[in-house]
Length: 157
Image 1: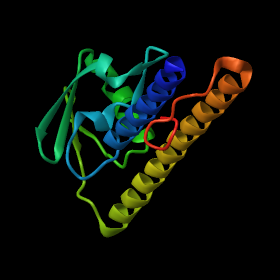
Image 2: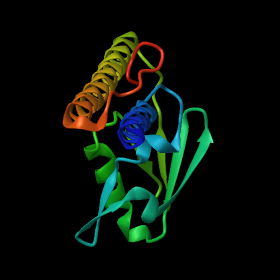
Image 3: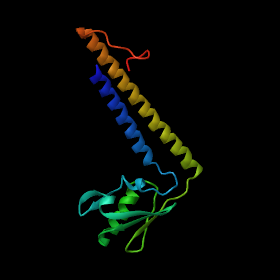
Image 4: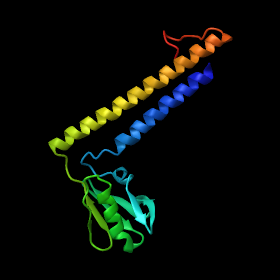
């Protein structure tokens, strides 16, 4: 029975970790290096994370900077950032890319709220499903002659 409880708890923790990771990628109008995590650069024909081809830094609250290790890849990095559909428009001076993070508009704020709500609802549903699966396992386990499960605080968990 402890194994079932541990499995359900692990599944719920994974759901929460996934939710936190998804929320970190939302562009809130403030410069953050996590914004660029989903960017994959075509580095000599191989999709490579941006972090592996350039030094990334936060210049100020509204500006990111990417300094490629190989300056011949500036165009590929620029293309990858634009293609990632993050609403970012980098500018290049030949050696570094400056990436201004635009401030939020009312429309973008509403879109962010909708997206955060959808992510939270999906996480709630996944947690509910994990509980349902755990309860079903407990019922099968107790029905197989292993005795009654112990209930804590009115529920099986």
